[in-house]
Image (cartoon, rainbow, N blue to C red; front, side, top):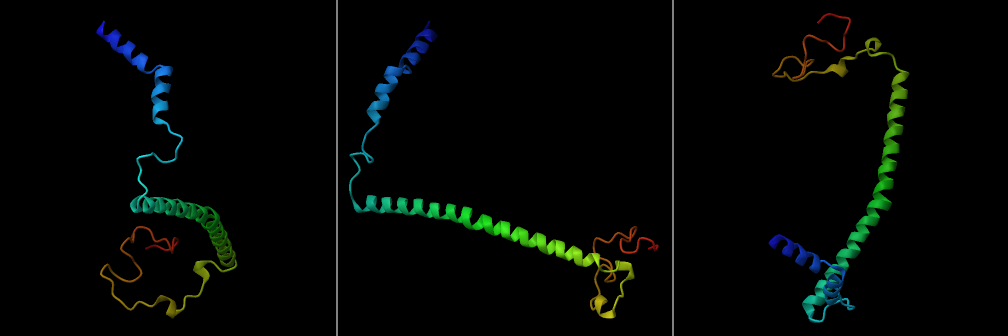
Length: 135
């Protein structure tokens, strides 16, 4: 019985006429409530809010109308450079047939992991440059 009374009271407070009366009491036609004083702090705060709104609008416009076209242009440029690079490499001889000049393979430092042809991640079982030659 107590549970039913609690449910009925909740339904009564959630009913449309009661809700409209409560909401109407808190709604006002003015933009600012009456109790806000017109002083220097409130004027400065309003100016800061206005500046923040205009600044965020500026950054939104910049990101839509400046950054996105720049990204598209940069992507097209990178794609064109990529295709030109591989067109150039398609006209060259394979790596095995190219002449290797002495200035292309200068090793002036002894590395702690061995000679300069191997790196830290060298796999001695597989030699990727010379697949046909044994390691």
